[in-house]
Amino acid sequence: MTPAIQLGLTVFLKLLDVATVVWMTRDVKKATALQDLRRDVLLGKITPEEAATLVDKIHVEAMAELDAAIDALPKPTFKR
Amino acid sequence: MRHDFKPAAWAFLLILAIATAGCATPQGGEPYTVEGFLDDTNTSLVRAAVGLRTAIDLGLVDTSSRDYEQAYEALWQARDMLDAAYTAYGACYEARMIAEQAGQPVPATLTCPEAQVRGDVALSVYMQIRPLLYELTGESL
Image 1: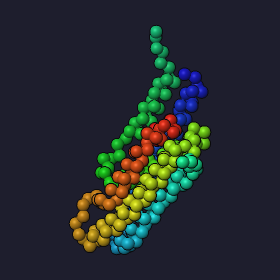
Image 2: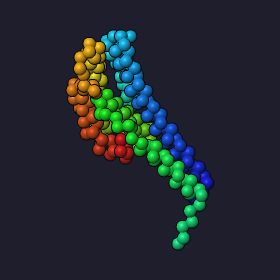
Image 3: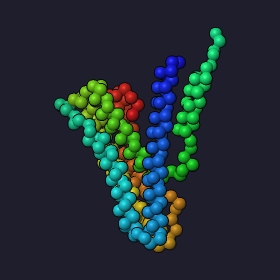
Image 4: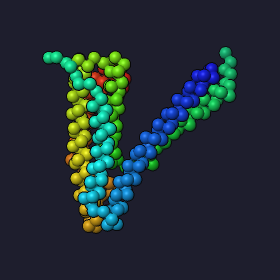
């Protein structure tokens, strides 16, 4: 194995590791946000309705990512 | 033939093992949740759309083909269903919070049949076009 290939593989694997951590962190952040909201509701800091509004906001953000990905697709031009 | 494992090769194998172990780490036995299911479906759809776009950019997909039209429409259909599932989940979440605040007994995890059913439909639409996506892009999306 040449040093160049070795270096390339090392960099690739490191990037893979970083991507995995970023992805997992995102999930953990969301789970933590939901737990925090639940705690705030139980402590009476916010109402259930306000918590639900914030949850909807999290979902809107998730959908925005999907919308952007689908919007980036060109419209089909199939002729029947 | 004698195999001469050099330190570099051992180092490579070590890095590979660490990277693989990191990816395979169990997520602490997380329970199945509707929220997680919807997020996983969302991730799959994003991945499919991004993969399709990449294949188009590479000139692999004919956007005037019937297959592309089918995949495009299915992605939108799945997206709309997922949106409805998230909306249903929001309503369930609010109802649960009201019940919990009032001190009523609630199950350990939030169940929401309406969100589950809509999420199932979104996932099913995606699963139906997976073979088509593979044909179009040459990748398992």
